Image 1 (tube, rainbow, N blue to C red):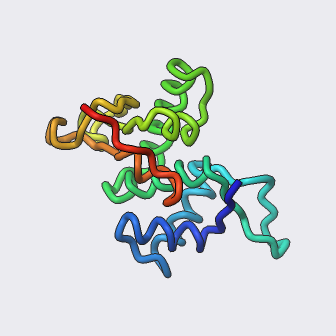
Image 2: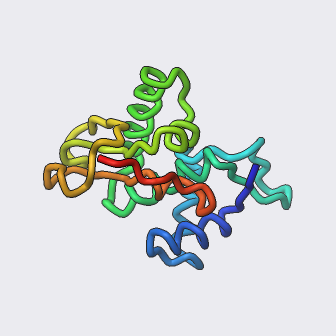
Amino acid sequence: MALWTANGLGQELGDILGLDAEGAAVRTIRHLTNAGLIPVQGDVHTGTGYRRTYDEEGYAWCSLMLQCNGWFITIKKLNEIKDNIMSHLNQIAGSPFLYEHVKNSNAHIVAIGAPHNHSPVVFLNKNYHPDELPIDSLCIPAETLLPKEEKPKRSSK
């Protein structure tokens, strides 16, 4: 199992998503973690000198939240997105684990409708492609949610 610190996530995801790995990305990761949007490995011990670590599940949620954050979606709406995804995962996969589902199914995450105006409807479906979605939709490609060495093969249409 791979583990990352906030700095490690900032560097790796900064490369993939085109973010400033040294500053804004790491601060945003820490902020989203404090808001409960990105799970950490083990307990959080503030002030003990130990860095928080993130496993593959944290990596997937971090990538998703950073991409949504690029759309200037509020923490409240990000919580709604996360709740919708976890609920949907429980219905279709029987567990709330985003990383395992994306890794096994190569599913994209799609929010249909303007995410700023109402609670987004979130689908996990590998048949959606960004070019085929309505203009006000947000699509997070599956390959951006997995660590570099675990990118899924593209499924044929």
